[in-house]
Length: 352
Image (tube, rainbow, N blue to C red):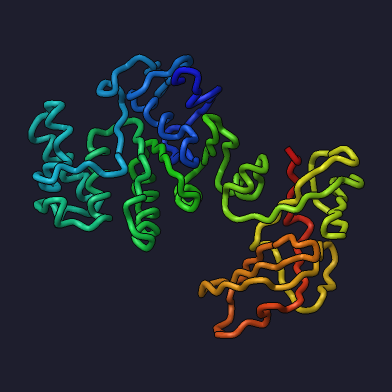
């Protein structure tokens, strides 16, 4: 807490040993403050921080079994790769022969042995990232904190490095906590994700749980793209909710484990990739069907994205895989189309 401002409020979190856990949130959500608390750079106003069952709340940063990899990597430019990795061990006065062995093992693990005598300015962004990672891991911490670890890399290298990071973490078995604002990075890296907003966790779960079953509208809107339609509950029978979308002049069914009150306002949420788009009205049963006009069309190579405007002006986004090689589309701008989705593909969120 900073004065009257709570940077973190009622945070209760268990991270499993050997887990790659990600804290995901936008600017000002409190994720960096939480990372600094774990590292010991900030002190909590109340509560405890336990690492492997030991209270670390008042333990100095240099005495915690924790290392941190900074977004900038913070490599020493005048030192070689080998010297950068060995630096922490030398400061801890580890025996020279042990330093040599541990540095060699770590460089072998991150595939940097051939570059051991190079200085950081002669390395690529991905290689610098691996040096920073090796330096953080060579001291064998119980917990490694990573602050936006891939932010400085270009898209292609970032995608490649994500899987390298996963494999390395699995090989070492060290607990990783990653802080990022990048949803794709969080979804790819993590065994579990905690989504932060305004200093609190909105949802904690696996990438699949957070994406497919968002806890509320904030999560649904924050993770990936989603379409939201406002509706009123008409009926509930055998796990199926019937809703009336007055604005789109249709009645839709949604599967639900909870029974909402008749007349209550809800949101129907459906991901763009769950939606079909056709020129003819589909005859498949157990599908929600809406009619609209193609407003925009974007071609991204592997997929096409359509923005379909419904009669009331609501715009629905549809993502379709381009499975066949073709420079043309069966659906074009201004076409009247039918969009549809399987009943099980939509979820219901409270109108909060």
